[in-house]
Amino acid sequence: MNNMNQMMKQVKKMQEQMMKAQEELGTKVIEGTAGGGVVTCTVNGHKKVQSITIKPEAVDPDDVEMLQDLVLTAINDAMAKAEELANKDMGKFTGGMNIPGLF
Image (cartoon, rainbow, N blue to C red):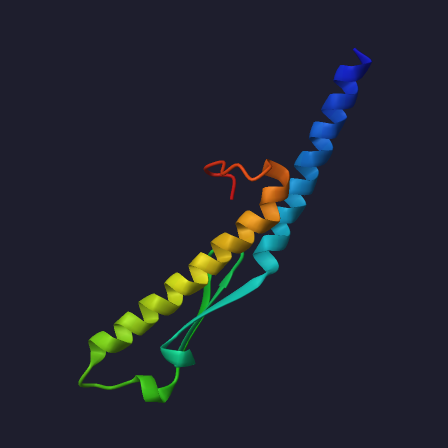
């Protein structure tokens, strides 16, 4: 019975550590870019877009599709980096297993 209590304490401690790590992810800022930096997207560790910056030289009224592509590329770049950060930060708790819905 003592082993069970000790195991439950360890599980509780790990849950607390995971919750703290999840909270910390939300404070981290990740930046994705496209077009050599003419479009920048900033997201937090929870993959929420915080801002999009577009330099004037990226805006060509005759080529709106290019700007749309740059924005999508910057967002996807930021999201991929955020995913990588989450996997790195939370992977220490999951032993590298990808658990859907955890992060």
